[in-house]
Length: 227
Image (cartoon, rainbow, N blue to C red):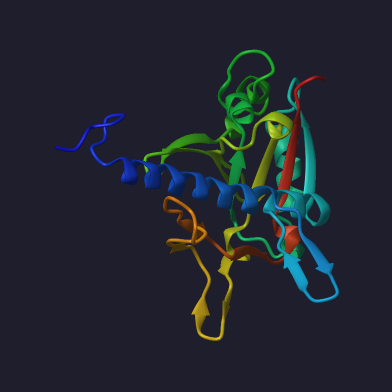
């Protein structure tokens, strides 16, 4: 009978499951933080697509909030500019936010968005926690200009823990490399080991990038928690 290792009877499938998860995280890292470039060599011309965060930081809408004092009024002023008709915005944005930023929007105590927003602005405050289709929670902030749908993004940590990235989903697309009738999206290539190798090596390969259009419809929000 097979030996059950780490709670699974099939060690090979356990490793595959782990590597597939790692690969998905690698793709997510690239889509979020990828540094675009165009390297021209003597024989090759390699182009690398941008991740949504650095691309928006360079080309999109940027705004900084002071966590200790900014509330609904400051948020409304930002929304008025961000959702301006000349930016060709849709009325809905998906906002990927760090755990620290999500905590700020839920906090009623000092230096919290809800605390800063009560008072003269409380009658206009519209913050809802909505159940997403995939078991996650969405914090939805609605104004007369548009809606921001905040979702927690665990990869926004360390140097990015003070950031949230607002994405206009109508103006981004996942694009796998396709040419000559061949789709280079995620594929599994087996037995790539050298001929003299005593063992088996498989490879998970994805050749894809993020197509970003109308950069002014995407926004990068930085929250100053030190002021």
